[in-house]
Image: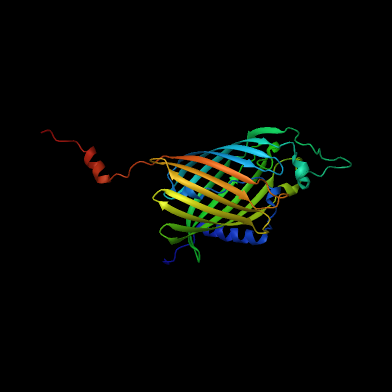
Amino acid sequence: MSGRRRPAGLRTVFCLVITLCLCIPASLEAAAPWAEPLPWDALDTDPGFAFGFQRFDDTTSNWQVDAFTLMSVVRQGTANRFYLRWRHLDFNTGGLPLFTRWPDVAPSLEGDEEPDPDWPGETGIAGWGRPELGLLAPVNLPLLGASVFCGEVALPFASNDLYPFAARSVTLRIGLQRPIVLRDDFTLALRGEQVLNASAAGEDFAEEAFPAQTVWGAGLDWRFSMDSILRLEGRTTSDAESRRLRLTLQLPLGDYRRLAVGVMHSLADEADRLFETRISASVTIGMPGPPNLDPETLDQEAAPQEAP
């Protein structure tokens, strides 16, 4: 039998990711459902729960969204993590309807019919967004070396009235992160991501409302104490039409608990951006696994004790 190792299945997935990134064009972020940044940190923390709040603001459109996010992380094997995210949205359109702001996402109707420019009509809209199920896994790739793979699918259980922050659509995201240790307290992470949107929204939107996207990004971590991290991140689509900067501070709150606060700013033009600024805060509560006990010690404790 040959001593060569067979390539892992995730390496094949990585090759497909690169092919998709080269073949599928990116589109404006303004014409796509919102996607929360992939939770790369979940691979390095204890499984558990996270509770988060986000506020989206845009001074030009007066759109404002408050989102409350629930997230659960469980182990898969010794190193992988499964996660489930779901957020509740309170969306205030500020009196500016969706089709007035972005007419390109309005559906094409037959005959002389025209889409309702005031759709969905209500200024204040609330509801649950799409649940997101994902997998994080470390992989060792040729040329790249030790990396992290992430695959996520957003399920079509949401209201179309919440678009572009949610809609009845399926989204598949495949990402790869390559961390590079610069110093003991500085780590650089390079990221690539392909987003595939499949419309399931009926006749409410045009096909342009659910584009494919290629996203590139990087993050720089400064670990200024054992459990405290200051992180600066940037991301852009391959056509450079959607660019964002994000600053996050992570602090410990005792055993197995963390606080993260951050701000994200959009660098896109006013006509294209989904929001201007986003502030966020979250608390993570880890659930450590059972201690690793020595089998010999367990055998000794289970053995009957002789009477004195």
